[in-house]
Structure formats: C-alpha cells, structure tokens
Image (cartoon, rainbow, N blue to C red; front, side, top):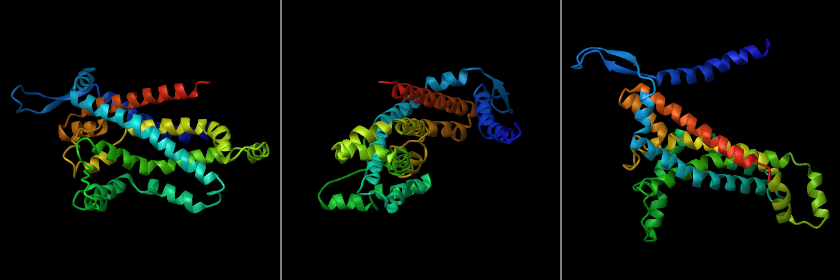
Length: 284
C-alpha cells in the first residue's frame, strides 16, 4: 500500500483531476450580468446545454466525419506497413541489423510540430522539391488542395507512427520461440509460409494493442492539421474535433463548449476503441 500510494496520488493529480475538471467545466458557461452587455460576467450552471450546442453544430459533425474517414483508411494502411517492416527486420534479410530499426523508428522521435513543419515545406507549392519534380514531368500536384489535404495529413501521421507500431510488432515476433520456426523449416516450410502461418497469428495481440492506440491517436489528431492550416486555406480552424475545441476555448472564449467538445471526443475515442477491441479479440 505504501509503495502504491505515491503512484495513485500522482495518477489522480495528472489524469483523474483534469478529467473531472473538464466534465465539471462542461456543465457551466459564462453569461453577462447585464442585458445590454456592459456589465461583468458570471458563471452559470447550464447542465447539458453545452453538449446540445456541440451536437447541433454542423461544423463539429463535419470534423468528426473527416476523422472517421481518415481512420478508416490511414489506420489499416499504417498497421499493414508496420507489420511488413517488422516481418522484414525479423527475416533473414534484416535480422541483426539495428540500423533498420533506428531508421524506421527515427520519425517517431521527431516532435509532432517539428515534423509538421518539415512536411509543410514538402507540401508547399513554392518550396516543395516533390511538387517541382512532378511539374518537370508535366504533372500538377497540389498536396494542400481541398480533396487532397486530408490524405496529406494521413501521410504525415503514417510517416510518424509506422515505426512505433513496427517496434510493437517486432517485439511480439521476437518473443516467439525460435524452435517453432526451426520445426516448420524441417517440415519443409519456406519463409513465406512461416510468415503467413506462424508469424502473423502470433502478431494478433500486438495488432490489437497497436490498433487501439492508433484509433485513440487518430481521434486526437491535432499537430498535423494545425500546422497545415497556416499554408492551406482548406484546413479551417475547426477542421478536426481537437481544433474545434481549441477554437471554442481561445477563439470564442467559450470554455463550456470547449470542455463539452473535449468530453465528446474522449467518449468517441473510447467507444471506437472498445468496439475495435471487442471485434479483434473475439475468438474465431
């Protein structure tokens, strides 16, 4: 008890207290004490009024739809890439080469805002060597266009997090006893058969973990669109739910709506993660 006590205190202060405060803040709003707006403001209990305001906002639902579309495409693509990289490193070709691990993991070590700034140079039409290269071939590419910018964000997320998920998958592969591989090869299995019939089934727990973390991270997407909003007119101040919460708090000074948006984001991430965990954990 004495050893667990300090951890529980820090956990309550760092994690539980902000959640309780946000939920409490979402039930109040600031209103003027004068009908003409010349007086001060007071905090008023409004119950679930802030939640209704958010749920009735078309902008909020548009931002949620972008997150859903982003997650349906980006999360599976990233997990497939992470598994492919893990299988490559665990194979005879990449086994023992630590440079591969460092190379794939390095993007995750770069802070999100810095990575966003780096990619903004690669996406910017006036600075990007990629855009210039396509232009030399007679192909016009606009990474910041209305229909493309969401996938530009997806590429940034995949670049940053594929290496992290690769390490999770690689750890799962390296925990498998090597005797199983040797027995399969004695029975005549080649590398492809070992990968498909032995390695992939053992990756299931790791993919459940990676998928759950990726879903939560996708719902919380903020750095990438926030950075691109500076150079793309199509990334608005409420492009994703987290940006909508920020805009409500510091753009409109409506902390009650901002807190309600944050609580709804957390509930949405929790529901999606629970559904994913339930589906993927089900025994077939």
